[in-house]
Amino acid sequence: MRFLFVSTDLIAGNLANLLVQEGHEVKLFVEERDRRKNFSGMVGQTEDWKKELPWVGHDGVIVFDDSGYGKEQEMLRDAGFAVFGGSSGGDDLEFERESAQNIFKEHGLDVVPSKDFPTIKEAVNYIKRHPDFWVIKQNNHAPKSMNYVGQDPKGFDVISVLESYASNDLLKKEKITLQKRVFGVEVGIGRYFNGSNWVGPIEYNVEHKKFLAGDLGPTTSEMGTIAWYDDDEENILYKKVIAPFKEYLQKINFRGDFEINCIVNEHEIVPLEATPRFGSPIVHLHSEIHDSPWGELLSAVARGEDYDLKWKKGFGIVILMALPPFPYQKKSAEHDYRGIYIDMTQVKKEEMSHIHFEEISKDEKGYYISDNRGYVLYVTNIGINPEKTFEDAYNLAKRIVIPKVLYRNDIGERFIEKDLPVLKKWGYIK
View (tube, rainbow, N blue to C red):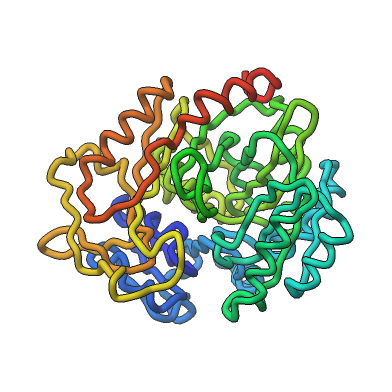
């Protein structure tokens, strides 16, 4: 089958690589020009995805791995193309946080105050009028390092952080979202949707966003994730959070991966944000958990067909292996590692399925780093015993030699010691 894979900045770029390995014909388009050198030697690329529409045709599948293409996706579907991805309604859920909270409320979810501000100054004034624990967030794909979770009950620390942003010429024009802080465990609940019905089991995940072990340091896009699948539609998290959105997703003709992140505690389930697209790095953990081929799943969802997704039981882990300048965006000559080969001579052939690339290309000498944002690759594993599963993943990571590599060495520890016991105690996990 032919797949035209459209990506903004390679959120799920390795899926294109896996589709090639499954035997499909694949053309990859990357919108960000400086990201187009990744996957060289692995996936064929195009500089204009729209010119490839006759090539993919109505028998192939167009895959969008990111939000922001809603109008194009709807026009393509109207023209008879099979499209995996979101829609205009899906884009609105992610890009307009305040509006999304209203939609959550309409679907029976308990929301907390959340407000968008066109300027940082207005956000500061709002906190002064409404002192509390506040969380700084941003819409779109703004740097996650700007996000901040308030620690002071009157918001003094959040005000100070925002004022520092306002004095920075590169940051002061950013649109800010403030959300009242909720205390508990952050859990994501997701499932594939084919335009009319759910496809496959339900996904639950616990993210690790802080840069350093012990949940210290700046907030990143994510350092790693723990996730598991379940087919129990009576689970309270599924019934309360995701299930009520079936009619809404039908209405907006959504055909892709849909997730809502929540904070849960003993008394409440509070939605934070929707992710109506592939998330990273959780998409790489999907590759680990799924037994069914990606090509079959993507095609079925895009065409609005039912699909019996085969999957593994147990707890999965994904670990980001990064390089400077990550977690920041500034690029400099001293943090440019392009052209350095990674040594995987200690990795067994059968272990390669646990390794997922992002800023990697391949030539006759092997795999090398082909970008300088720092998101090099990901390591995954799944098993019934979480302790052993996570340990095996780290043992593999240690055998991948990447000069000056950065990664957290404690992904999953908090989950085993704290999150899993309380989620069971509160009745969210059996």
